[in-house]
Amino acid sequence: MNTTMRIWHRYLGFFLAGIMTVYALSGIVMIFRQTDFLKKEKAYERSLQPNMPIPELGREIGIRDLKIDKEEGALLTFKQGTYNKETGLVKYTTKELPYILNKMTKMHKATTKDPFFYLNIFFGLSLLFFVISSFWMFMPGTKIFRKGLYFTLAGLALAFLLIFV
Image 1 (tube, rainbow, N blue to C red):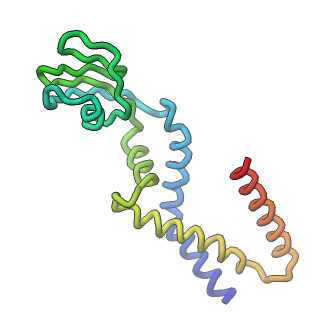
Image 2 (image 1 turned 90 degrees about the vertical axis):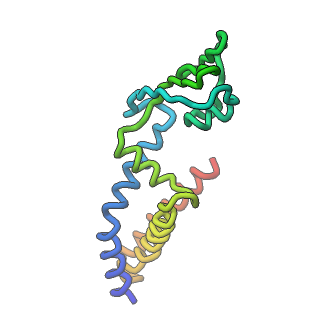
Image 3 (image 1 turned 60 degrees about the vertical axis):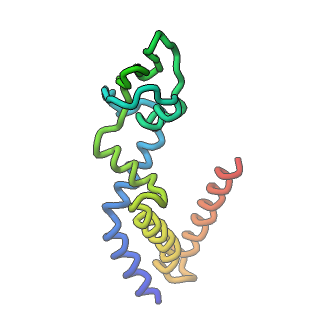
């Protein structure tokens, strides 16, 4: 059992090295998602239906909780741009991550509506396997195994401390 777990741990680790790198980098980038870190401004101009309700307009252009700041005749002004109620022309700007980072964070945040959610489940189960199989890396009763258990307890204590504080 020891040898088998070590072999599975090793080759699954090699197999998942690339995807672990993607998840690590996208996780770090997601920490800054409420800031403009690494984001570039992108301008859009689109023709939509005239007289759209504000919530529908927000959904259509991908801006949550769209709030109108000013209304001058048919022209509605909001923080990111303008919308002409008569013509349906909307001009707005967004701040977006570079293409590859945007794709990585979308993969990281996949829900059951995305095809990536199967990958996320597989990846999560693989990480759980790594946790369990790591206890077969060293023979029980050895000094290094006991030391490993102390580090495990310290890690668990830190996790619970962060969760409950």
